[in-house]
Length: 117
Image (cartoon, helix red, strand yellow):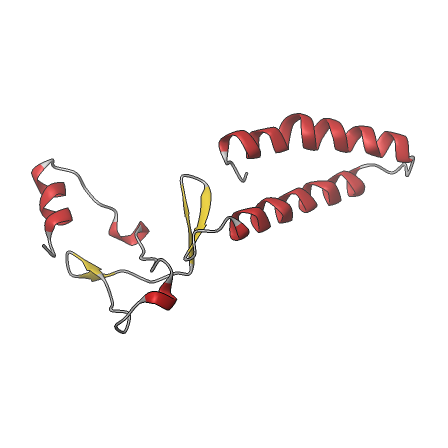
């Protein structure tokens, strides 16, 4: 049972990039035994509290909090970029730049496709 994934990958001649792999223990407060170190083909996998898979952040309790925090931080970076780019402090122009760039191009991509950059 321990080597089923490795055997399956070998059977289908798939190479697993073990250096890009990690382990996440879902809902660790319900783990009855001490968390064991997981390995794949003899290489120990690091354990993380949150991971990014297909550009979506997943944490150990399967809540979207880490994903939303990353999206919010990236949106703040983009707004600060707009403020640094424009010399004018005309509120109407800055609001139009913010609306055009952030909502029109960037946030739709993030929300529809889960892209963070």
